[in-house]
Length: 97
Image (cartoon, rainbow, N blue to C red; front, side):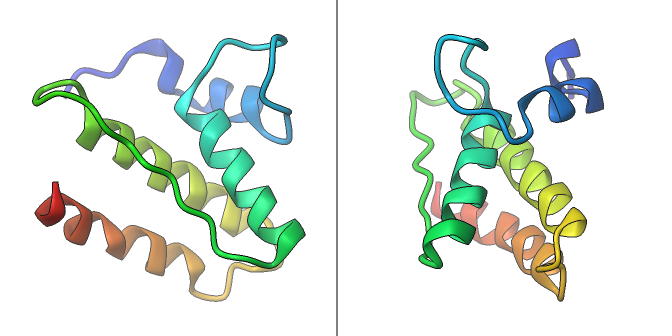
């Protein structure tokens, strides 16, 4: 598995609590952060669709998104098992794709 430098803890912090827009380039961490905080604000489920051609990195993007959501849930007051629920979704998502 090849990790690029844009998927490290520095970038996790860079995209936390930042609005999507022209300030920062698009990133899977920004999408995860936005969905998580929108869920907390609206108290409604959120959905992120990751699509693309075979071999385009959907599985890796999903893993990055899930780990970022896990990190966010551990920092908040909603950490009561949320991280395990999020991480257990990985195998299910892999079967669907």
